[in-house]
Length: 324
Image 1 (spheres, rainbow, N blue to C red):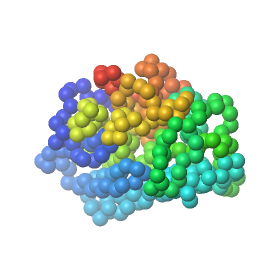
Image 2: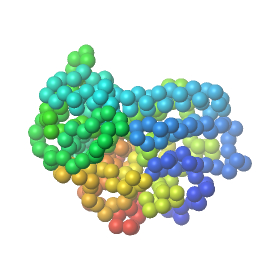
Image 3: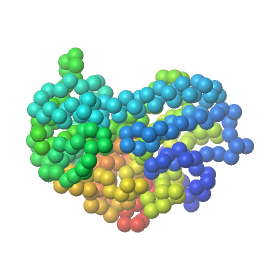
Image 4: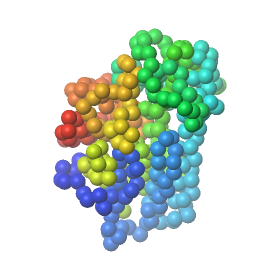
């Protein structure tokens, strides 16, 4: 992937696609191909997700987007901790009990445990005391909880039978897939687009974005990283083709990542971190795990995870850094 080192483009050259930390470049009408860019935005998973499809048939593009959005909503329904009837909600409500879960939830839980093993002090799908699982419940939903017991079996997942199951072994902990589930939802949305014969598209949920194919010029999609101090501005641009990005940072809502040591918001001088990976699930987990890591720790952590994820942009202590 080529990183642009020239000054960031004017914000008017970027689509509003990417309400979170990422934006996608548009083109002057004279340079566009005969295909149409069809896009739609929906609220889902606590953010605003957008799907954009470049296709010559607008109705076909809309049907493909319908399928992609259905996948985003399905992940939210099954993996949110804010619904008592979701897989995660039922798991949190029954500590010490084997709970039947769906194949997708089992896949994400297993991936989360692999990331925890690769970054045990940076990534943990089980944090804090049990949280309210009903939307609109009062009180804090990310309150600091007890420090994790490293090495203790907290979460168990089994996919060997006809129906996967999981067991939360600690009543003092709660499963939260906020650091990986959104990326997986984007992956499923992209898969739905491909299954509908779409060759050129993007899906973005907040700071998690995946792209396939090319833009209207026949080149890679140009993606902008928003400035955490001015989310209306783009601080850096890069090119993306058949890959995924995830950005963690101080966007819109302030600190939102928890320190697995304390359960409190992470303490770090980093203001923004963007990771590229083959899948959005791995990009999402990697950005979560590396965000609070020291500059020299992050690459080693990602190498240990062995997913091919790599840091492509970071702002720490007010100084931006980009990959070579």
